[in-house]
Image 1 (cartoon, rainbow, N blue to C red):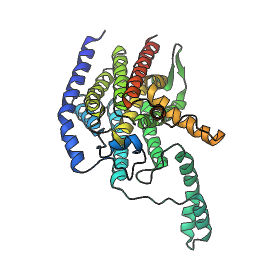
Image 2 (cartoon, rainbow, N blue to C red):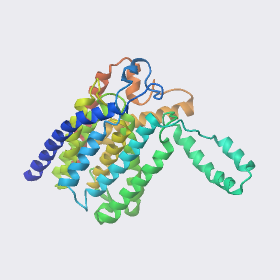
Image 3 (cartoon, rainbow, N blue to C red):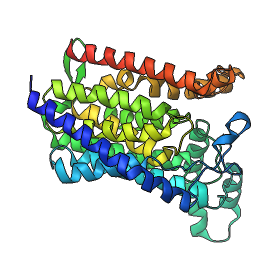
Image 4 (tube, rainbow, N blue to C red):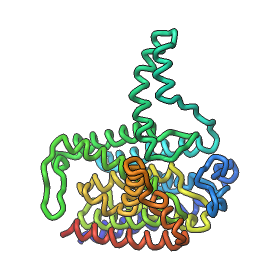
Length: 370
């Protein structure tokens, strides 16, 4: 066993925790000062028993993103291994930050329907505008389709716009794996069976898992402490797996994330002093996917990120059930809201989801080393 790597990883974890705890009060004060908080008039989830969350600062995920970025840049910068994961996390976090700020301070966006666009394409007196509307038709069709799986928000970045940017982030990641990490990453690790050579097909596989995981973490960020605690468990398992496989860059990186998450979750458990926001959930979802892929254990993602995947799948199943059969499969999606409506307390849901997540991470480790 490489005890020196384990000692180094634990040092990063401890250092990251201390840095994040020192930074947290400064961030909380900043968010309150500039009123970057949840507002009932714009947030459709602040209804009934959830109205007490009105006024809670969002963008608390900056605590994790900034801490991890600074520590990695100073102490764990590796142009072969860590610069792309940190860069992709940063891009996703910037997307999330823009969405968070636009949801608070932005204006209501006007969206033309497909019927309006088709009519304008026919009657507009400028030919170049008619061409523009012609290209807008498939974009609108995509917006309407993916909009079924997202919340009906009138502000911020829309679902189809997020997916396009996430696709680009996934493509960058796939390019890095395929062209920079070597031919051994052109094979897909199959549990209990070794490696399956897939060649260039690894590119769409990576893009899919990056996009799915990013949105899964985003969907699960709905209860105080749920996403933070589940991410601590996922990245802890990933730290252990990276150490067991001797990944000298990734074990400290994952440990750094765990440390920052410990401080974040301390302030995020009910009643939360701040909430993660898209800046944190999109950034960390991207980083989770990338770090699992980068150690060539891509198919472990649904297990090591089990709670996030189940939450996202519940949204997909709910939409399909309503569209195909005209009825709800769950009382509300994602899944944690289903149990809220059934009468479970927020604390009960969060702790039970943590326990399920911990069990599945143990399963993932067992599968990985089997």
